[in-house]
Amino acid sequence: MKIYRYPTKETWADLVQRPVFEREEISGLISEIFNEVENNGDKALIAFNKKFDKAETKSISVPENEIDNAENELSNELKLAIQEAKENIYKFHVSQNAEVQKIETAKGVVCWRENRAVEKVGIYIPGGTAPLFSTVLMLAVPANIAGCKEIILCTPPDQNGAVNPAILYAAKVCGISKIFKTGGAQAIAAMALGTESIPKVYKIFGPGNQFVVAAKEYAQRFGVAIDMPAGPSEVLVIADEQAIPEFCAADLLSQAEHGSDSQVIFLTTDLKVFNETVGSVEQQIRDLPRNEMAGNALENSSFIVLNSIEDAIEFSNLYAPEHLILAIREFEKYIPDIQNAGSVFLGNYSCESAGDYASGTNHTLPTNAYAKNYSGVSLDSFVKKITFQYLSREGLQNLGKTIEVMAEAEGLFAHKNAVSIRLK
Image 1: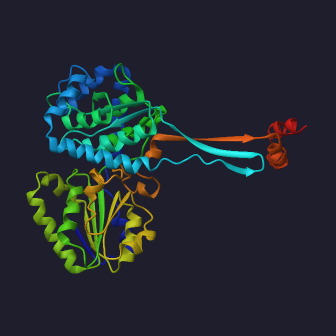
Image 2: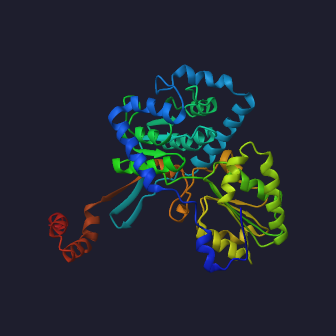
Image 3: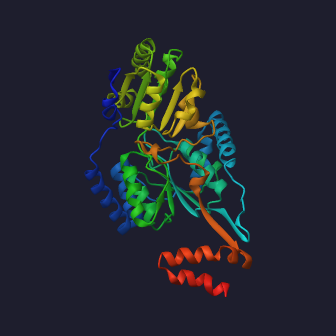
């Protein structure tokens, strides 16, 4: 980990940098994968399963009996936890439904906006060392609330060619039956292009490593939308003298364990909290099963002492973290100052893990400073907004002159005539 005490603001631009990857090399590989999937469909996906995941799969589709049997492999405790998380996610996202408001902008001129679901959506669920079944809930629940007609799910198989049973169970409780054994960039390619088994979708959702992120960006060339550039996980913790160092350390490590390409930032105004948090990180990491990944992530991470909470908030807005934790006394006071963050956690007991699993907010969030211009996934992510308007004869008479004058000033006389011919 990198230690900085009272760095000057002139150095902040360097301190907010993320780990850099060889994008050109990745882009070339992504292009090759898309070409292979486009030309060979399911056959290419089966070959990629063997090449990248060491998995022998005769078919890409997960059969119905495999989905049904997954429930028997899980403890009742885990199934109940998944159900409770789903209920909370549903409560939070269904509240985002807005009533249609018809606005009379001028007498006889009525405008309004209505939601329409994105009809076909694809959900990508990372597997491998950390099968993120919680992401199934985060994406499928709002997709169902929105009314998406077709929801498909892609996730990598394990070395036995099977999908993690918790992923299958979470999909089942969310009503998803179209599940496919394919991961990485090739899964994104399959959803963007379509294969014999996997239908082409209109929008792709889900987090992943740098290859998945690059593939989602590449998929947009084929007329497919994506949720956001959601890459390696990150958290920024701001702590004052009342913060609990053990809690801060645990939150930092909860993101560091996602993978070697994750990044965590710790900011504090208190030297005692700073030293104790650093010590607690070094102690807690020893007991983590994924301590090697967490240790690699810490090499790209920074622990910084600053002069004030105001400076810490300013630094955070520059960094624009995926997750922001305010382990400070007067966190309400600083809420209006937060400009750039994917999701914010307030106080000593609002651990980031709550948002990752069961509080109700969505954990699919912008990373790599994209919180400056992207929101996290919400109900809005699964709908389009269509505007409607109705002009009565009186309405056009009231507004017509304004339209004619503006159209003529732009030199668009057919636009003007579309009004004039009606007014005559």
